[in-house]
Image 1 (cartoon, rainbow, N blue to C red):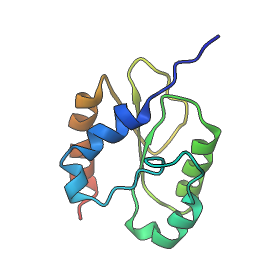
Image 2 (cartoon, rainbow, N blue to C red):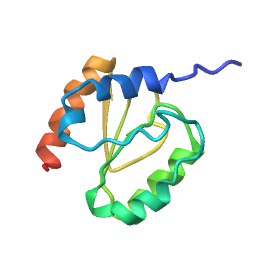
Image 3 (cartoon, rainbow, N blue to C red):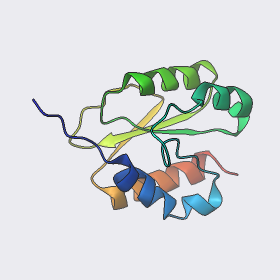
Image 4 (cartoon, helix red, strand yellow):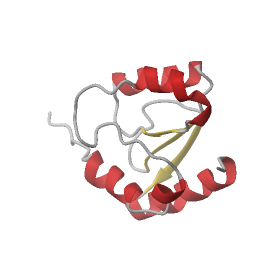
Length: 118
């Protein structure tokens, strides 16, 4: 069985980087330039008051589960989202669905602006 590989750089990073969110929030794209492990735990511990975690959870990932556990442990807010046609593989604090990149931004921006003002 071949699993669909999610091209997160094209389908997730690019639309968010091209949106108004990128000028309002300081966004970190942990695998933008490298697939090497990102020092997530260290970032969470040093910047916990400044962080909101955005998590695309359409695809099962043990590493992502660990990172979301750390966020929850440190009381860092998590906004989780998944494709409508995909199962929510990781439970989290908040959840919403999207059809495509345009719908993702339409749903993400109001949640951030209303609940996480700068």
